[in-house]
Length: 184
Length: 173
Image (cartoon, rainbow over all chains, first blue to last red; front, side, top):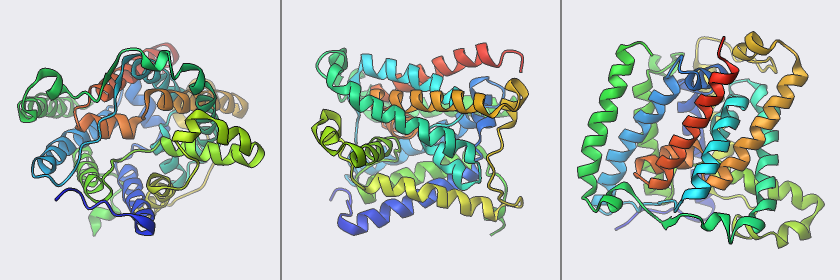
């Protein structure tokens, strides 16, 4: 069986339609705002965290279910400790300073916020270009640091994925409901 | 249809829909919701106008080719979807370069300052995402749901640095 994997021109149309739906949901979630993203990092309004974790948990159950009946493939990004940690640390500082991440920055433009277009898209393009220039210098040393390949939590623990998913959904899902009751 | 006209969906509804959309992406595209690779491709296209040989010889752009693919089209669709969503909301859509409220409260309305910090932040976002091999979409959302170790490390690192920075910058805000 496996996934449909639409190809050719239809694939480009599919990407475009998927993007419209993605942008629509992000806007309705109200996470396309500088104020919301900064408030998340300042722990004053956790909407961004709640939406993100709810998307992760529902997708986790759904994608692992579809994987179990052989309808989708998993796409695991390799664990490269050096790159994942340093990249994440740099990204977090940038997301706070800019007030957007790549997806929400583009979505904010559709909502009328040109702040994201002017500073965000310009900056992210420069940052991405800069990385392409740095890549040849680090590809054989830094990027190889802590290379554990395509690792998931279930494979790391050598457990059936559902024995991880069920507790994760209960604990994180429960925390979300608790946070919500606390009014955060 | 009133639901589509609401200003805001509850977090759990929006989250559930993002989860469902990601399932559809895994099935239809054999891929996952993601965003930042497109910025590498677009940067390659732009630099290719001035220095085509340099881009062609670059080891990263040889892997992440400056072409329009599924994700590139997704990024073009995102602002359109956000525009439709905002148009359906009670408040009118106004295209404005106004500075965000939290920013003005803390740093005033000096536009040059926002330019400097915003572009610097953008550079960090672009560089960090490519170094980590994903952003809030590809790593946090899509990698997180697959229980990828790399993605949970990324998520923890970005929350740690973002929150630490927020303590310094917005302590009194």
